[in-house]
Amino acid sequence: MATDYPDRQPIGQIESTISSIKKMLVVGAVFALVGYLLIGMALFFELTSFHPLLDSFFSSFPETSLAGGSGGTRGGQVNSALASIHKWPSTLLWLKLGGVGHILVGIFFALVAIVRALSIMPHRLSYEMERAQE
Image: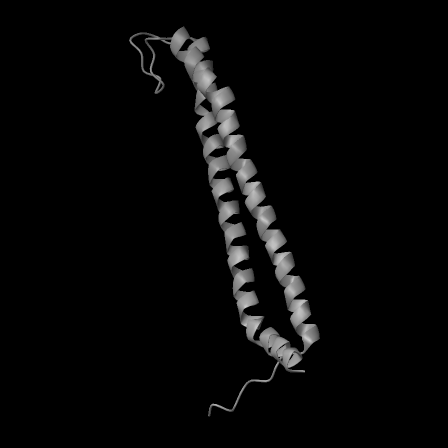
């Protein structure tokens, strides 16, 4: 029937839900901030450490590829340069994927908070309508 309405939530429960929604938004913002910091750190390391390392490798050993192939025998200096270059991509990938993951978790928290806010809206509106009629 159209006259069977669900019972309203008590005003204390509505206020408690609103405060928990605010906490969820803060947690989501913290996750998103950490994600942006991780991605920013990855870009910073890539531009300040990885690219100069590549430039110095190609200027020092122009006939050697990054895969390690060359026309002759390789010395220890080439091997150590290649080892230092090959450790960077995994670190950069970890930072970028971790950043994207944190941002997505932050977005998820924000969306859950929005859904919770929308679910209490009818109860809060009923109190406001009752107050306006008085």
